[in-house]
Image 1 (tube, rainbow, N blue to C red):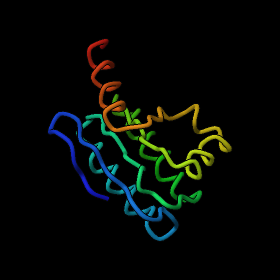
Image 2 (image 1 turned 45 degrees about the horizontal axis):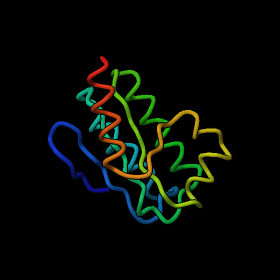
Image 3 (image 1 turned 30 degrees about the vertical axis):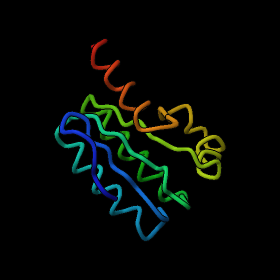
Image 4 (image 1 turned 90 degrees about the vertical axis):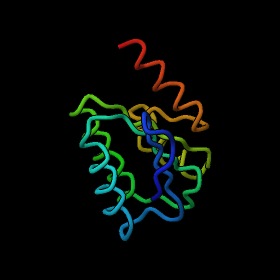
Length: 114
């Protein structure tokens, strides 16, 4: 997990496998970032594998974001990973974007509407 983006809207780039070994660190890292109440973008573009533990970490982070009035849009283009969101119905829970600029634009638009 690495953090990029501007100070206003952080982008957390996740890569490799998000599974039982790595999911707790992802959950904890996202929770720490969300403590401020700021929205963040989670970029899953370079995630090769995501299991149920990884999905659980993202759901926990989304819950934390919602409790703090923040948003947690995802960026995902890999069909294998997108299919997991569709199968589990989480594609209706998360805002999933095809690119980081699209996700950032959505957050900027949401901020203007608030």
